Amino acid sequence: MPFELARTMLHQKPWGMHDIRPWHKQVPTQTRTGEISYERNTETNPVPALCLKLLLADQPLSIQVHPDDTYAMTIGLPSGKNEAWYVVWAAPGAQIGVGLTQHLSRAQLHLAITDGSIADLLLWRTVAPGDSCLIPAGTVHAIGAGLVIAEIQNRVDATFRLYDYGRGRELHIDQGMAVALAEPAAGLFEQCRLSDTRRLLAVSAKFIFERLDLPPRSTWLLDATPETWLLVLSGHGTTGNLALATGDAVFAQQDKMTLRVQDKGLTALIAYEGSGPNSSLLQKADGDIVEQDPDAQVLTGLTSAMTAFTRPRDRSHS
Image (cartoon, rainbow, N blue to C red; front, side):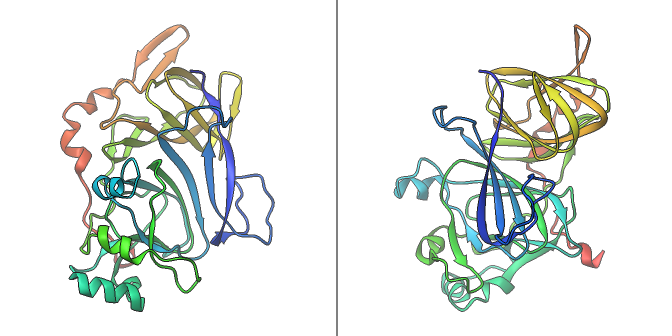
């Protein structure tokens, strides 16, 4: 299946940004764009299993939770929802909320949701560009103001909004109560360097999330056998007849992509289906000779690293 340049869809949100450059060429407007989603370039193609987005938050997002597989199936959905975040840009002091500061009884959780104190009970962590985290189903979470976050998730429309800062949008208290884990959660993902060019950002049962840092004037062969999404964060490159720059995304499946990096190098996020990192994901190409990334042996014994998280961190106290 040939790779394709993804089309972008802009979504207006009350918490979004007026200026979404350099992630999109749209000039600043009076409307607030809170989400850039990436889709296959024709609607006749099969619906992808994964969903890639950029979230642009000028104000805090709602506090929400996603269901697990068991609950999702009871309401007619194919599966629950897990997602992972990568902090692309952060204003000084910007925070994400993941999990609660303490264990709550169901009665305490209900009261916190209805009176709004859930916002104070979230475990807020100060983040910086390059941080990443996994948001498993059941984790109460939120994104604060002053952040641009890349999000990858399995494609299920299952978000239960618990608190929305008085914006008047629908809340899903009963459904949220049914799935929320009223307890602390893991902190930022303990990232693992897989090679000189690959950094593991998050792992779930459905997808792998990595960052690629490719040096100037290099050529790489990318194994996109499973469904694969690539989002350019900085730099320039080409694949086939496509020129890639900041904000561009590529979809590929059952394919091999030759990625040629231009003079300033290229940094990209890559997400693909699977339950563990692909040891042959990226190979360096030298003319007609393809050589495996020399540091790929780091993948050996990676099982323990795939579930490692840091303790909750708050850089405001570091």
